[in-house]
Image (cartoon, rainbow, N blue to C red; front, top):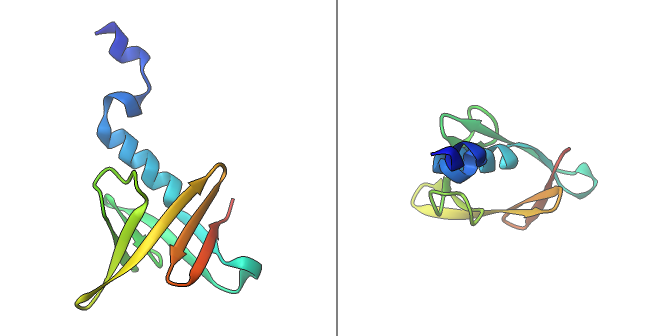
Length: 102
């Protein structure tokens, strides 16, 4: 039992690890030269693209480890990908690559 208390919360609780990953992905994103911007928010256990009233990002895996999501557009699915590279987080949506603001 003592070993459990010495570990990080992410190691003992899968939910804590998912919340940490979601927090890492949420934020404001901008394209090169700030031509386009978009907001990703964490709301009630899901990420939303476009702010509080935006569209939900549906994860491809429940653990959020792959960074692969999709948006539902009627009957079609639009892929969305997050890539974490050191201190930089990228959001790839269609032909646009957004960088997370620090």
